[in-house]
Image (cartoon, rainbow, N blue to C red):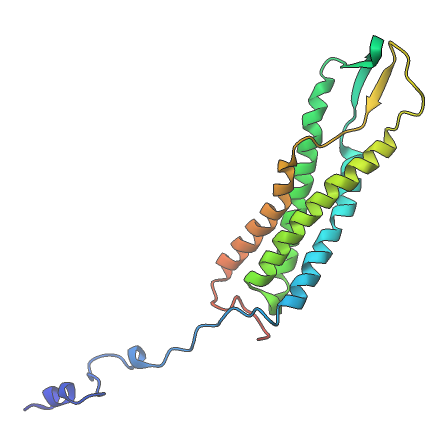
Amino acid sequence: MTDSSQAQATPGARDPELPAALFARQPPRPRVVVKADLLPAVSVLSLIGIVGIPLGWIWSRLAPPEHVRVFDGGQLIPLQLESWHRFDGLGVYAMLGLGAGLVTGAAVWLLRERRGPVVLIAAVLGGLLAAWLGTQIGVAFANGRYAVTATPAAGDVIALAPRIESMWVLVAQPLGTALVYGLLAGWNGRDDLGRRLG
């Protein structure tokens, strides 16, 4: 029997023609850390949720009111092209939410020692909470800004406060957060996402 056939027949022996790197022991893949990330995730969720307060205030300042004319019987008819402002309010809030989501997604990614799916889920839920809180607070701020103090007479033109008529705008902020975080995680390319702490 030749030497090469003896090497192949011996269990545990390796072929000398194959590189040693193929037989090197691979390090274990990092596992998802859940328990250590729960408290930071709750902090991330609540901190991002508070962003909804200034977001709603900014929306109440930027969203245009709808000017309507008062007719007999208290009927309110929008002036020409003023009914478009109903969509403007939605568009302004969606853009504000998307921008806030992009910023918060990048900011949460900078928490290097807590990178992973637990903090990502918390950031997305925090964005959803912030979006909901922003719609509630923003409408309240807008109602206070455009409050009608006296009973209007027929023929008067009044400004109706902007309102949010579709809850689909709640999707913009968490979507922006998940998009930025996912792109940064894909760009990182490491199994542990570059975490510094275990």
